[in-house]
Length: 377
Ligand SMILES: CC(C)(COP(=O)(O)OP(=O)(O)OC[C@H]1O[C@@H](n2cnc3c(N)ncnc32)[C@H](O)[C@@H]1OP(=O)(O)O)[C@@H](O)C(=O)NCCC(=O)NCCS
Image 1 (spheres, rainbow, N blue to C red):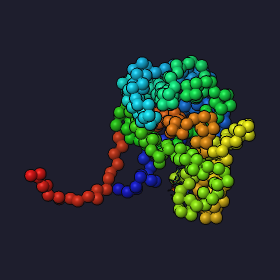
Image 2: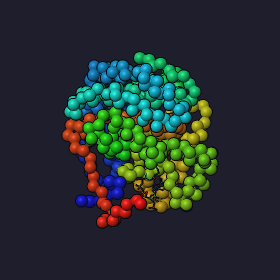
Image 3: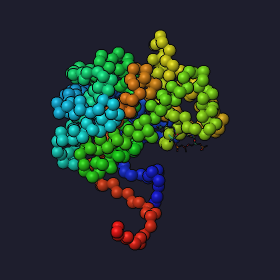
Image 4: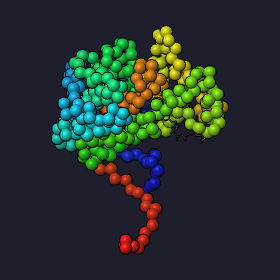
């Protein structure tokens, strides 16, 4: 048996869903480069592609889009559960609580009944979007908004969150950001979903567990911490000194570095292009983006001096800046990750169930043995 802390370097299963090509800075979904999908596709098309394993034809895309719309509305018991939660509950915890209510709505299906699981996935993708938006509205003291039948999946989410139809360009950029976050091979939350599903638990339980795994700062929360850093720096002219001091103290700069990418994260490149376009179009200064550009330039310069040119910005470096630019609060950033990643989680579970084996790694026991039992007297 081999021992690998955190399972680093351990191949736990095969997958055809996505691959991170760290040396080349590429991410592929079922063989297609993320750049191509981000430029030319839509949330609906990519979600269909990841779940079903083939790109949809026009009529398949249209019925998939309708299916996602059909599942937008929350049942009254789910809405009641939502309204019973404390308004200051962290949204990720609220989502886990509400998914527990959704579990009994999952129709029983044979493990290999792929179509039934895809139907459940469509339900979860849509319900999660509505829940994320409504939980956010409630926290902000706003009334829940009725869902509507118009708009694409991600535009409708922005409509629910912000109470108005989104600007077309912003809606497109947000759709791209969601495509970029849909899957990333065996990351921690996907692995958590797979472990839960390997026991043949409900798909909804696997998604709920994945949300729990995503909520931790080492996984879903890094973009919030990038904005904390930008807020602490306060203005672009203070960025270089702040970074030099952080590096001198051997501190980590949030949003830089990655376990697998040894060059620029392709998702970071696309998000930076989006931010550049927004900055060009805008009449007002985006201070967060200006600070992060300075942080970026200082980091690249300093890391090249230290011969650490394998450390580059990751997706989290720019994503928070984009979400803030379009008016989304920091506390809702990790739920946005779930809004997209639910597609990847479901796809992995469905793929795994085609040839399932329960996950059961071994542990190296390092405790004592033959300890005499002393009865409490
Ligand atoms: C993502 C991360 C955990 C990857 O870790 P890793 O592959 O194990 O990289 P290491 O921690 O081994 O780093 C190698 C070297 O680069 C340095 N380094 C790595 N990331 C750095 C960062 N963000 N800022 C400054 N230095 C960094 C390390 O200090 C280390 O230096 P040393 O060799 O002098 O000790 C790490 O880069 C990190 O903590 N980044 C910041 C958090 C973040 O953005 N997380 C989101 C990831 S998607």
